[in-house]
Structures are given as C-alpha cells and as structure tokens.
Image 1 (spheres, rainbow, N blue to C red):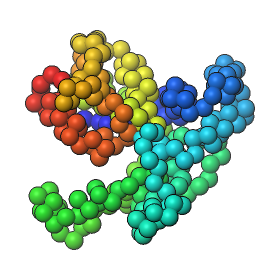
Image 2 (cartoon, helix red, strand yellow; image 1 turned 120 degrees about the horizontal axis):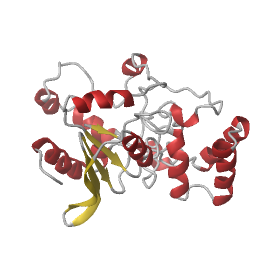
Image 3 (cartoon, one colour; image 1 turned 45 degrees about the vertical axis):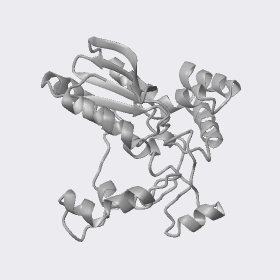
Image 4 (cartoon, rainbow, N blue to C red; image 1 turned 90 degrees about the vertical axis):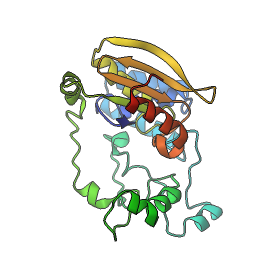
Length: 260
C-alpha cells in the first residue's frame, strides 16, 4: 500500500509537476509554450531551467502538498501565534528537492522542522498521547515527530532507478499492491503516478470508474493484473491526514478484498 509515492524519478516529480501545474491553471499559456519549446522540443537546458524557475516562482505561496488548501506560514500574525514552536516553514525545497533539480537551488532546512505550509499539530498531539503510544506498543520515552533528521540522514534515494524496477518482481510474487493518490498533490502529482503505472503495461482488469462515499463521488479507481489504483478527489499528499474517514473506508475495502 503506497500513497503519493515517488516511483520513477524521470516522470514522477518535476516532469509531472510542469503538466500538473499547467492543467490546474497555475501558470499561463505563454509560459507553457516556452516550456514545451525549450524543455520538450529542443531540450535547451539553460533556457529550460529559466522557464521552470519562472513556473516555480509563480507557485510561491501555494501549498505544494495540497494546492487547494491553506498554506500555513509564520508571516501571518494569527499563524505565528499558533506556531509558537515555529512549526511552519515557507520553503519547500528540503522536502521536495526533486522539484528544483537543475535550477541551482541551494536552500537548506533540517527535516525535523515541519514541512512548509502544513499544520501538523493535531497529528503530533494524537501520536504522542499515552493511550495511543500504549495501543501501538511503542517503547516509552520516545517522542513521535512528523519529520525526523535521523530518518533523513539514513535514507539515500536511488535517483537512477527509483523503485519502479521492483514492481514486476512484486507482481510476479502475487503480492496485493495498492497505489493511491490524492489528486490535489503537487509534490508527487497523480499524472506522474498514472504514467509509471501505464508504463508497466499490465493487463487491465476493470476500467476507470468513480467510487462513492456517502453517496458522493470521492475519487476514481481502476484495477490491473497485480495492482489496484485509487484516487482521492480534491485531496492532497497525505490522504489519511486530510480525509481519515475516506482513507479508512478505502483501506478497509482493499484489506478485506472487497471491490470499491
């Protein structure tokens, strides 16, 4: 079960973002024309980097993890008061460095600070409750945090292969594979996920269709031989945090083998 996960670095991140941002009207046709000319047609790296930097500039202030959501930043007085521990940051570079690759970005931020634009106080409060710690059988004295420098320092992304190469082996082993995407996520956009799934060339078992929650369309789903995909309509990067009820509904269906 993987949600909004980077899988193929060639198409899953900055490449997907350029299309995602355009189809969500985050930059205009004039810039799109230059992007297509210098980044897709003639591959002029210098001019392509300039255009991509322009697009990134236009996206400043957008919550990259939920483009329709609020961007919580400490510049606003009422947010500063709420974030007395400085849990909101303005720069997204340390958390989504792939979106800036080739643009000369050199910002740095420790990963034990909260990601930019995100309000994580509620989830941190929840996981540090004694009854939750006990229920999850976590060793006492450990504080749960949303982001960890210890984890970051011991994780090395494979930018060349990603994790796409693992899927044929996993599918042959007949593991149940569930991929889901919040379709308002700009950090790992849904169009990139759909592209790498398509590149696996898996036989289609059930075609794209909507799924309902409380009688309303809540997303879309399709099933392939060895893999199921589900989207969450209007939801950002961390689906269980943004919409826990819908996430629980879908996860339960998958784990019990029920169709959506």
